Image (tube, rainbow, N blue to C red; front, side):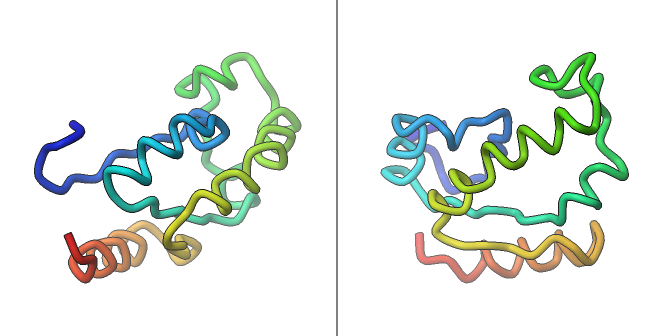
Length: 102
């Protein structure tokens, strides 16, 4: 996707913990940290759909969150509060992306 028209790429999976990944992302666009409270993540996470968490527990999610959240915050050019539900999150993300200078 590098070099293509603007698009949104969702990383997750600890991508922001690797400095090489962060450098590539920063050199080709903006990094938006979509921030959501841990209790909301725990309430609806589908462990079997997350390769890094398959067979894990909520304690594993908490541990991974605590190990990774600092990397995501540090890498981000923008933070988006996604604590008010899906519809509001999409609206806020759309507004943010539409106002970026490409």
